[in-house]
Image 1 (spheres, rainbow, N blue to C red):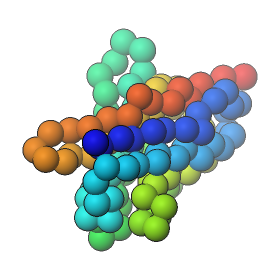
Image 2 (tube, rainbow, N blue to C red):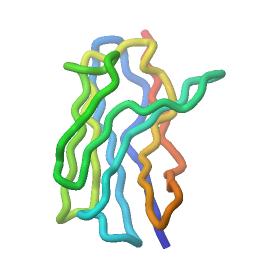
Image 3 (tube, rainbow, N blue to C red):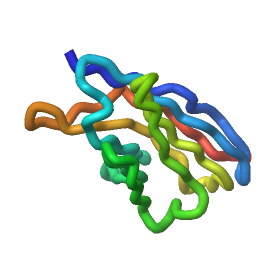
Length: 115
């Protein structure tokens, strides 16, 4: 079955960096678009970055020039490099995809940006 497992979250000071990973299995990863999403306490889940199966990318305005999404089709893994982190980036980060007509998510990884 489709499985998505995020890792790499943690506590970081403002201005710091983290690299999130999402290991996938159960589907032909190279043929599917992937996204990183986040959900802060009391807020709705929002799309942070998206990478197509052709590796074209899209970012929400608030993370442009700070975050970079990438994929490794040999490892079936999608990454999110996050630089210049701000307190407002604090959230649970999820990777997701659409397969068989429905969305799939991992369980998420918590990113806390605080001094």
